[in-house]
Length: 278
Image: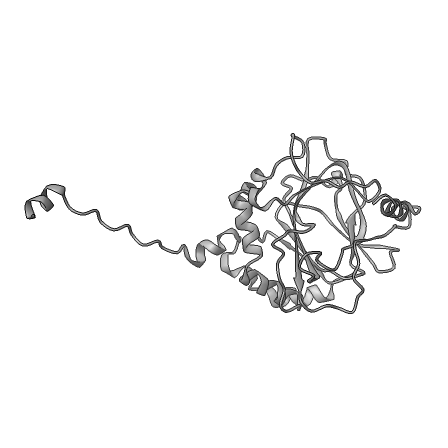
């Protein structure tokens, strides 16, 4: 028996136990690692005081290399594709969305997973003052948004009830992915006051710029001017929305589109026509 065992050679060594990558790897997509939220108290004060509604602009929050790899994974609307689009003239034009969860690349999945995880949700709650924020695994209305030359998104306030989970929408996060974007091309995010008589804030869609704002019936925003970028350029962003079980005293509604003073009623007319044909 001993000769047989010896002739077979030594038994193979057991495979080493898997080692958890640890928090350093988890927070590795943030420019400051786990310390990314160290100034959240100061940011929260600015968030609440912001005009025309609570919001904040955070530049350089993420590791640029991670975001470049995410961009490389996004299918381009300039090539044959299966991207989602639902253009309506005067409301949204030349806009494409990519939110096919099983088809997302590894870096995109990692990024969205981080932004949906407990540490970042706690950061968002500390920033916004809204406890119990929940991510949206369906990416309903969200995901990667891409706008081509001539594209626009009329001023609006977002729908407030998730059609699947029935949770109440409370916070929007927009992460811009446009390296080398030029001011002359337009595409600025505009924040309007509740009376819709003034644009209070314009935010350029610059690479590694994150915008967070509270979602209410009067958080009117959009990029309503047709973009003038070259035809081979694309305005890209990641849009994620956060919800709570708690509901504010607002009636459930779909997107609330609004005309600017110079729109001559075109936005409302487009919305009326849309409802007539659906």
